[in-house]
Length: 327
Image 1: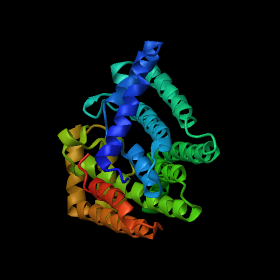
Image 2 (image 1 turned 120 degrees about the vertical axis):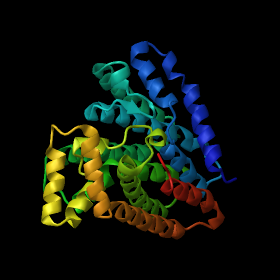
Image 3 (image 1 turned 60 degrees about the vertical axis):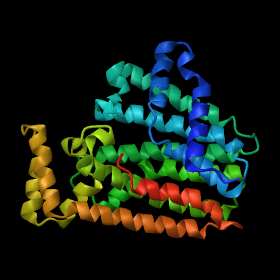
């Protein structure tokens, strides 16, 4: 049986509800955890886990709790990201540190980290060493990527290549782990796991470029948070780094001056930076980069060696759907 995107999403939602995390005590620790998990999101990573498992096996049962573990861990990183970025809104709702407190966000996030490992260990015992290894590598990579992202804020020598290295850690590592963990649960051989690993890196790279693009050119009502946040924070996004690499010296200096201006009203700063992006055709350049990664993902998925290639169709559809996302 090949599971559809919708069916995988339903399985994850049902399993998360069964956890009944918000009913645990102390409530001030677990209510924010439940709040994060119940406000939805794309459920991309657990869906990828189930679908990668399903490439190699009709039975995806043993991948369900590892998929939930990945989703819980992902949401833990969002709580801490929002705190570090001092973000007000996530998925059209107040962030945890705004709704409760900064201390609550730290502690509830830590609890989610621990819960993720607890759920991962509900996989069959013979799979646990491989799963824990893949998961731990990804968890550490996310931390490394976050640190690079923070370091880049005060580094004016960051290149597009540096940015891609950071993406590979911060964003792609958990997507890659989702695919590899699913494949391990499905009984895939090492060659197929490695191919899916490469696919995850390309997909994660495109996913982050899309996030960068959506922060400037997206629809705030659909995107779930205010646009221009990366510009106001001076984040070294793909858009900004490509602009600095493309611009002549005068335009580049004007762009840096805008980003460093602490007195300019936020809307004016965002508008002026966006005008420079438009002048340099950054919108089109970002879309081209995303399209290239999409082609690479399609090529790598084709190289996954299965006896029945029709099993790839749902994963192919999910990847295409996410390359066209608006949030």
